[in-house]
Length: 349
Ligand SMILES: NC(=O)c1ccc[n+]([C@@H]2O[C@H](COP(=O)([O-])OP(=O)(O)OC[C@H]3O[C@@H](n4cnc5c(N)ncnc54)[C@H](OP(=O)(O)O)[C@@H]3O)[C@@H](O)[C@H]2O)c1
Image 1 (cartoon, rainbow, N blue to C red):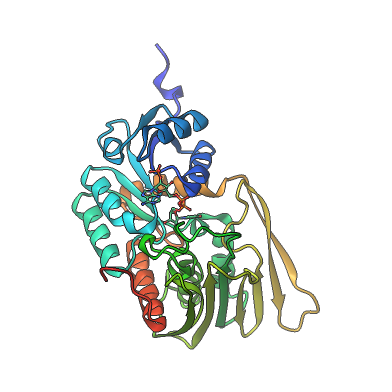
Image 2 (spheres, rainbow, N blue to C red):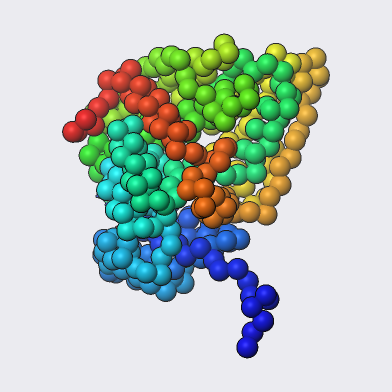
């Protein structure tokens, strides 16, 4: 008989729902997590589930999403479909008694987010919106610096996340309105959630709600926001300049300015993808050169996200800086306001 005290703790058994681009990164992350293993994968086709399962060594392979939700060997489901299907599958997963990690944005709008959160609450399961950067060692360090007053009183935040798809397929999810295409939902949540985090932490809170949002944007022939910029004002006189796009190449960065210095984050959203070292640049007022602050981690980014879920499972929601339910709801309302400013509505809204 093995000595039970020497057995490793049971791992959280993940089921991955959909086999696209980000599902692959998550499968690799879970394989390097401290707390999880991928037990099952589901695709709309048996072939794709088989292929993905074989590649990542996943034992249970389902050719239908609902078969994954019925799999008794799955504890937690990771939803990796395009945004318009998040509500259906996150809700069904919660109703099946599975814990849920749902890709960002959690839904198309705040109303969908409210219904998904209600399903998690009613079925007493964990739920988190998958903003992986919020689970990283680098974000924890940024929060620590702001909280410790390294910049003095925070006045302004600048954040961007844009990319230009090479030879983009107009039917692909980034530019296809029916698939929730456009910059605000795909990547605008990053700068907006960063501004909310910093504006909150600067005032001793987990996050802050903006008092005001203004925006302009370019809707192309695709009908979705190809690129757009917003300004927001937060309590305490904190302002933010935010931009995002799916058809725009611009520098990606975060810069936070306070009355005694400023902090530049060159790799804000995907720091240390497979572990490693990233740098923050802290320029104190009056100093000639910025101080380079190195953040080193042995965690894979998406492994840290899976571990964040496991760590907060009993509380049913994550603690800041990871996404709590109220943070997700406020973020979706802010993205609704940003879209409303530029006149973008999805069918059925
Ligand atoms: N956190 C991050 O770093 C990050 C990065 C990229 C994307 N995301 C988010 O993850 C989600 C998926 O993005 P992705 O880039 O992985 O997309 P993707 O490569 O297009 O994959 C989406 C997958 O969803 C499934 N699917 C179900 N219904 C579909 C439909 N009608 N059309 C197309 N695919 C459908 C497909 O899997 P099956 O064929 O197996 O069913 C498909 O492979 C999005 O909500 C996005 O915002 C997050």
